Length: 199
Image (tube, rainbow, N blue to C red; front, side, top):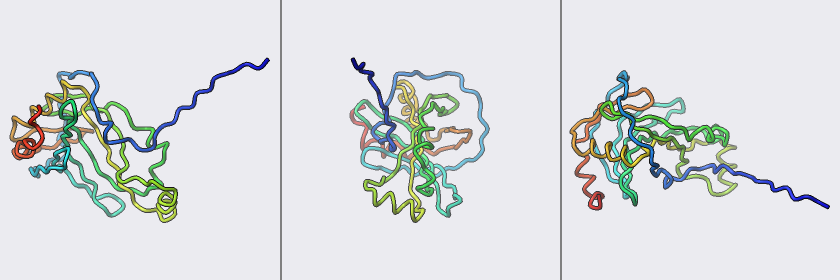
């Protein structure tokens, strides 16, 4: 008689959806240690993007001859705003393998005015290939593709703290990945008012 042995196969998705930025129930972690300011920018321009508002806080040339830019993004979802740090970066498509993408998903800290907030990282392919022909073209011709490296604050309490800091300060000290920026938030309220009636 044959015995049936169940086999489970798990598949890791190649692209993480921006809709999965969501929140969990981890709380605010207090008493964040001081960080060294590596660079400061004060761009101060907040823009609206349908379901979010954002401000570019840094632009850095990369080795491929294009510019990577980092943003503070406030995304308005069903359960309230989620505050994230997003770095848009371009790199050859062939370098961003499934193995490399599987490294993402760890906890990373964001600090606002010295307050440590727990975030989670993800990597999102912007305008991903939807056909084998597109993938083959990118691989064959070593074309650049754009990826968004996202660190999104996780808990409701932590997002409430971050959102309140953006609304009630003209400037904030924003730290992530050992970099710190002094960010002009004086223009945030005007953009926020387009989305925040429910909050």
